[in-house]
Image 1: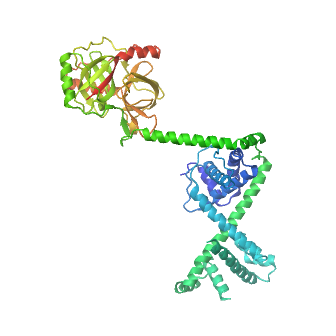
Image 2: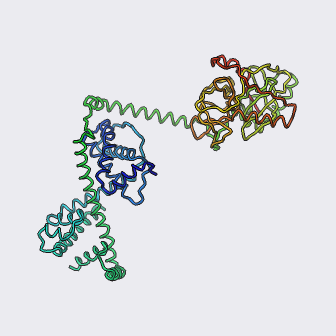
Image 3: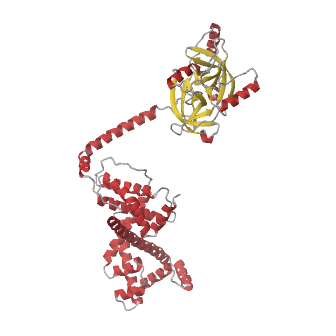
Length: 188
Length: 362
């Protein structure tokens, strides 16, 4: 659906967390979005947070297997920001019934719902990791998030060998799972 | 302890670190023990969650860094809004909200009223612009009236049936209108100023939506010359046009422009024009600035705003040839030289208006 091959490259880059791609998207869109937020009673901080969240929504969308963007990146980012800002205003009861309309919007409700669901799960994961304590937290992060290998980790964390580190990692992982799923059940 | 080993097995299985033999054994175990199977599913979901969390965190971190860097390079600017504007907005927010509410209510009620009062359209996408004057059907009484009035010489046709517009193409009394205006009619009258004349359908072509009528009334005085001409070539996009017609019993003038060289769904025998017209304008001539007829108004698309179609003038020439073939007494001569060039619009209309007729079909 995207006719512009540049936009397609940018989105592919975004899905891979590519710095230059993100920088380009950022440069091309930030000022417009900021102007929109500022014009509708928002602050510079609001603008930054909303814009970054919109990029995350786009990133989540770009990573999906059935990904297809039927509009330009700027239209999508604007639509998401607009929706997010409206929601925020409503939740703070600051919404006065008017919000200026500067560009076309596309429907983003479903994706934002999915995004919210994800954000909640990430929050649970973060809580679980924080509740784990050291050295478990750093150990798991080194292996699962930073994808470092076991030998390196064993050296850094002062384990006698990789096998020891591995055993420790599994113990930590089991605890993490327990904390996480306990929260998961509570949420349900 | 056993749980720990199982977790290790599951993770090695998921990450593809197992030897083929181990995989076989493990899959066997997975089949025979549902709790193992459940653990595989659950762990796979958990790992997905964990990496997703990591990616999300790293992206947030990246975004933060990029923001700072772009800010430093001056690629983006953080501009505080002007305090005055904000305070003004804050001050009047309630008033604005109230005004917006009132405006909303009014808009809703007006649109509700409009929706309620708007007559329902036919399902067909092209609404032919014929005007149903009254829904009384042709009755015995009207036929009786007609016979009576013939005897009396001058008469006024009963006000019922369909109305459209027509225009002279030959001073002897030949009139062009839209085929759909006179379709399925058993008698046709044309009306100019205060005179009513009976007319007969010479030929009608539904495809190009053009019909030729002939005034068959002894009281009709032939015109020597017609002021306008029939345009021979094709017309250009954006050319300004105007029309005269009878959407009501008074003649109404409208102007617009040629918006496409083809008609509904690419019909090359028609033009698309943008002009405000109403039922009753059908069959009206479309003039260019030189006072040449470039088309005959045919219909508008109900699914789009301001889209009107016009049959091309060359269809008139075509249908005339057929009429001549069918009956050689139809010796119609078209005028190709307009005497209206370089006149202003008011004078053009004054000269033309005598040649435009309100076509009534019963």
